[in-house]
Length: 157
Image (tube, rainbow, N blue to C red; front, top):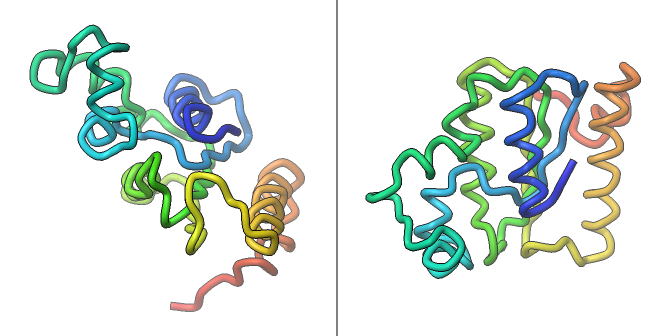
């Protein structure tokens, strides 16, 4: 599991191996290209860290290193958590990877934390955030979905 850059690395790792039983990404970047255009560090980070490489002059770097472009390789169940008001990593970074995995039929869930930024600071929301993570791993590591189902009851469609 990881948050921010750790969330990006968690997603990336799941595109390269199936050794994990479950994973969790909080506010991770799924597409370096979209983050370049709308993320807090975005293009200014690219100008320095990427040696003036941009989506139009370094397509391969942006796509080959973005988990979104390798979503079809993910088999590990991934939970995405993201503060809706995140000004550092836009919530769309989790939405697009979650959507890709859903379209691919992979086990995944996405929990948005209303009113929270890059860090979940409000006490009650932080407790629920922690419990969501623990319940996710209980479901996938212990085959105990009851806690998760109590937090997020299955919807009857």
